[in-house]
Each structure stands twice: as structure tokens, then as C-alpha cells.
Image (cartoon, rainbow, N blue to C red):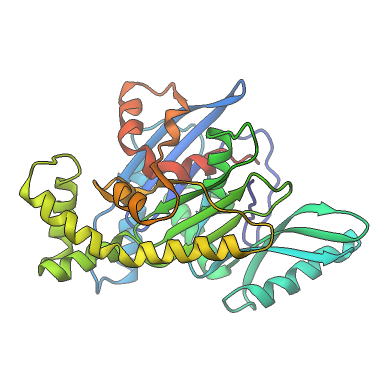
Length: 361
């Protein structure tokens, strides 16, 4: 399922190519896809890590760092379009389901707006809201709404504009992930409750879809404990700088035999305790909801997900089967061998961009 909006500017653009642009806090990913038969083909893609932000760094410098990363990401690839689909996440964005008594269609939008002001955990005076109906019969109306602050949306649109791009659609990270999951990991039985756990730099997103319930609403939660916090926790324990910890973590992604890898494995486990608690409590909350069922499998992705030993650690501590997920294992590539090699290595960090690229305008 996908749901998207364009802050205050709605446009109708037909038969135009777009690409997915995931602007994160520690990396930028760009993916362009085209339909082929019943699947997708990558026609252009790239992933660029950003320079780490200093703790007291000014906002303007951070924005310039991000714009440079976007330009660097797009420079070597041929997208043939400057139309980007972006996304938002965090405490200024929300995904909620709703259920009303029957309403005429002309009364639907005011009702959804009122619902958004009541359920969204931020100031409702300056927000953008969109919604999608899931069912509409003579008795009840149910659906899904997304909302985000104008400030958050405008910040992403501004970054794209500074990189000479037009942000024509705005999605939500969790819905983009579920969109990608539905296209790449089809559940033929329609009976499995699965989830995606995207561990980024600033936020961890847990998105759940219930295959057992027809017309069920997806569940999306953004958690504020993520890769940057894990790195900081390790740095404090080891009395190291975060930059040195990041370099050390990169160093033990591959070699099992190094003493440094074993030492950091213990530190990683301690630093991930809060993440594990947050995910486990969210799973319990979801299961306790009406008509919700136990999550059987979690696909883990995001830039931090590729840190060695992390997926194994999560699999031991979280009550579901945990697997590292690279959606590009199910998507062929026509952009050349170097792009294929990059997708094999960096694919788990590019799942949001892939889901955004699957949107249409």
C-alpha cells in the first residue's frame, strides 16, 4: 500500500518518469525503476554516505552537507528525470487508521482532518493530511490517514530544490517500505503477518502488514533510538569518539577473527538493549490490538542493519524470525555491473528508495 501527498502544492503530472530519493540523516539513496512484466527492473541507482554531523554543527552547514550528498549520489547515474519522490519520518509524521459511521463522500475530508487533529502527536494547526479509504459500506467507513508538519515536508522539498530537483510526491518511510515489501516478497497464501524493521541513523521504523485480515490497515511506528544512538552508547562505554566507533564498526563488518570485532560485539549488545525493548514492546502492543496477530517474520534493512552481528543479536532477543533483507535480490538490474555490485552490497540500505521509486504519478 502506498499513500502520498504534496505539501500544499498538488500537481497532475502524467506519463512522467520519477525516481525514489531517500534523504536520510547519514546517507542518501536514489533508485529509478521501470515495470517489466509482473516485476521491476533497476535502470539507475546509487547510495552515498554523508559526512558525520558534528554535535554543535549549525543547521545551514548540515543542509549543505546533505545537498552535497544528494548531488554526489545523482552525479554518476543517468536518471533522465529531475522528478523525485521523497519521504518523511519521525515525531512530526504519523500514520493512523480511522473508522467512522457511514459518511457521504463530501463530508469525508473534514472528518479525516478532525480525526488527524485529535490523534496526531504534534501541533495540528500547520499540518498536511492525506488519506485512503479501505472500506466504505452502508454502515461504516474505514481507512488510513497520514499527516506531517508543514515544516518537515518543506524541509525535504527545500533540500531537493537546492539539488535542482522537483519533489513531486511525498510519502512516509514506513509505507514506502511496505510498498517495497508487497512487490518483492509476495505472500501467495495471504496468511502471514510480516514486518519490516528499518534501522537508520536517526530513526528506526517498524512497519507491519497483516496478511490474514482483508482490508487491514498497516501499522507504522517510528522510534527515536537508532544507529547514531547505538554508536554514541558504544563510544561512551569505550571512551572513544563517535567517529572512531563508526570506523571500528565498519572494520568489523567482515572479519570474525579480529579481537576488535569480539570486543565490539559485546558493546553492540549492550548498546542495542533499548532498541530491542522498543521493538519488543511495539510488537506486543500490535498483537494486543483487535484482530491483530503475532508477527512471524521481520525483514531488517536500513544503513545500520548491515553492521556485523546485529541481525543475529536481534534474532536471539526479539520474538520473531529476523532476517537481513535486500529487496534487490528480487529486482533485476540493467544499469551495468558496477550498479549490480553496489546493490548487492548496499541494497539493505536502499529499501526506502526502492519503495518510493515504485510510486506513480
